[in-house]
Length: 85
Ligand SMILES: [Zn+2]
Figure 1 (cartoon, protein in one colour):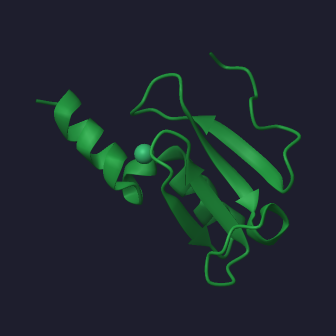
Figure 2 (tube, rainbow, N blue to C red; figure 1 turned 180 degrees about the vertical axis):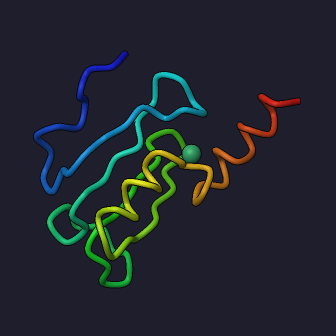
């Protein structure tokens, strides 16, 4: 469950287990290297489970989003709501 499944991909920076969707990852890429368009921002944070992407200028912000996918991912917000019922 915790293997680094994205390590080695083009532009890969970091990945973190999705705390809302067990077994899934949230991944940071260098947007340009990975070919993700996030309005020219340097980093792209991707929710594997729902395919949501947010752009971040600085790595610390990207890390916060990576660890809290409900900050940017509608699907994770919904999943969290469902789980906390
Ligand atoms: Zn999500």
